[in-house]
Image (cartoon, rainbow over the protein chains, first blue to last red):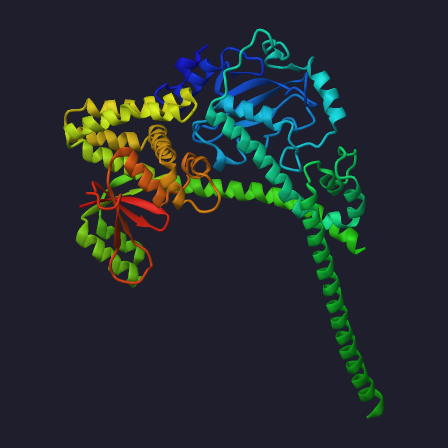
Length: 285
Length: 268
């Protein structure tokens, strides 16, 4: 069987880069581990530890990383395989660092950066972005427990892939990486805000209910809009502003319906006149 | 009644938007692919007058092409993929230096020492080294060729190999970002909005395929210690192309033609 070195032309900078990354990531850390498949340098499998003090604590999450032929000019795609309640499994994840937002990816980032971003991104709100799931914390905790015994068809038991807390020493974050992670968190929140504005109209009907309980955790409910209203990040100022906007929307729609009524009357009037003319023609000539 | 109708409309709207996003992205990729397949990363030399065929019947542009042809004999087109400034600038700089061993060597030294600044700015060391090594590799390969024509041919080959060509672009993007951040007090006046220089670098300089503005050019010039003259050709009034030297008052060694959101290389 050909080894990775003979299979690819190491003259290609992209291939050289992936081999470097494979060496850099060869030793598992406490938080993440990733390595290329034996037969394909452009597909990797990874395991990350659920971030502590979140509903993912104690969980082990396994997945695939698909690298485009243009890597590192274009971002890797991440696909989770372990059920986790935050991301759909077997689907490319929407993360500002992965394939769906190529414009924010930087070639100086790496697979390690992508994994750090994934871990940082897990506890953020999904708010309906591609590939996101809105499970409750309890459901996620159950999945985290279950994940310990989850096995990958290719890699086997995944919980054993990571080092224990005592044995490990994760490489320190570079300045660049921490600023990137901040950006990702920021991006997630911005998205959440934008989504809320979009949902204004839907939120109208349930506004009073939502306003009285702004800080409770989301209830299990299919009502997307209800969840939006319950986001703990919603500050009161933003809420006031939103109410104003909602009122305005309401007023605008009342105005619109008034105008509609007027037009209806005019149309009915015209029809009546035409009918009168026809009747006159039929009977009175 | 109306409410029910509206809420279904909203759900299907949401699905539509996400589907549309994907469709738009797919379409965008398709267009990018078509562009990249039709235009080489850096083209062969061609006469400036060849621009006329693009503007037949357009008097303003034709007059400007004539004006340009009076000042420059030939040009090289570059692929319009958002990296064109960085690719054209690096190519033109190296092409000129190949004819002058002494200047090439001092440029080599400048490049050799450039890594430390980037490390200090906190770039991930091992990916940085990856770009740096490839950049220096290319310079070494060129330096090892004695015959100038052979060296220029090698330069042309390397810059049309996507892997290497893009690596050269990335490294200049990093150097440009470093320059901006090193002199952030100066450059911050050129950035609109509330972005910091570092934010600007992360969003507009370091990612690939992001178009270059004045500010990118100024920083790239000062990072490579090279002066550039840009000739602007657009639909503006007048029959002549306007020119701009960056940094101001320099003796330009690289000449670029700018047409809205694209740069090509010019030769006197």
